[in-house]
Image (cartoon, rainbow, N blue to C red; front, side, top):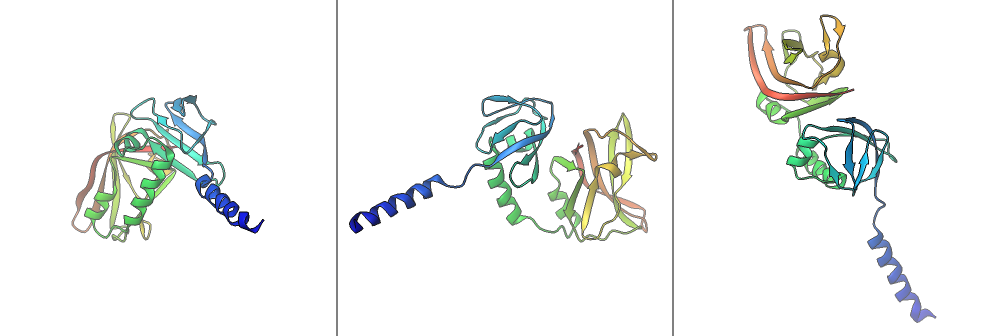
Length: 210
């Protein structure tokens, strides 16, 4: 009996090794436009899918927010960013995010911050970009955006250690909350002592997620 024990243990070990970790699943929380094909089925809000399922976007500007059904963590993906990076599944998206995370850091200069802002800046309620650039009531960042055919300049409230993009703050105009919309925006840094504005990032798309 003993001579069969070791081969059996080896076979069980190999089976466990190849079984690997169970696939993660995700539930769609937000989708615009409101349908998408994932894993050869049409999905909408509240649909679930596996991390290995292929994602076929219905529009080049589509945005989706999902939640891991086990951990509860939320993620936002856009058709443009994932397609440009060559991702067709959540699994490849997470592999890419880990590589990016290892290289990310604090923006020490305006040039660092400029490189950190993508062509599509997705703001899921609040987005913090780490930065030790001076911010106070005399030196601060502001967003210039085209909303309802009008150029709107919105000051970003200074926060120590971060440049904070807040959907509620950005879309409060003349003291009134307005519906958040996808807009073309630019980020500036203003110094009141010299009364100068420096363009940090120009012509990116600001995408608010409700």
